[in-house]
Amino acid sequence: MSTKAVNEQAAAVLASVRERLIRNRTQLASAIRGYTAEFGISVVKELAHIPLLLERIQSDETVPELARELFASQAAEYAQMEDKIGDVGARIMAWQRADEHSKRLKTIADRRCCTESSGRASPDRLSANPSQLT
Image 1 (tube, helix red, strand yellow):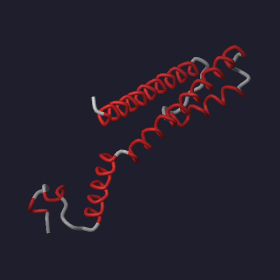
Image 2: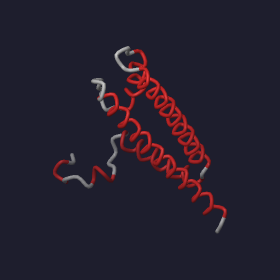
Image 3: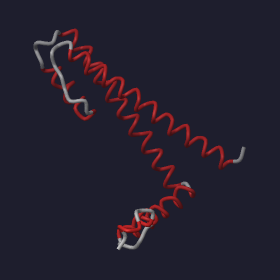
């Protein structure tokens, strides 16, 4: 296997690891929401609300001490997953910035964006109904 193929395979593994971490974070967030619902506390399904929910639980005196300890453990696990996802995402971005193939794709995408915003006909616009083009 060539060095290039090995590097591309490593990047594919990195992307796969990120996807798995995101799935695991989503599962943990769903479990946390389910557990808090047992205590009559609910929250919107957005992931951004999970840390706030966990903070709220810690200060809620109606939640038993044992449950608050367990939620604190889950808060630590959630924060750790967020850090790992951020680290892997940063590594993917660094790889993309260094990879020659990715650089070329970005250049093509940048050119297409500029062409579309300049008002010139783009392939997308040309595929539209001809009667709509003026």
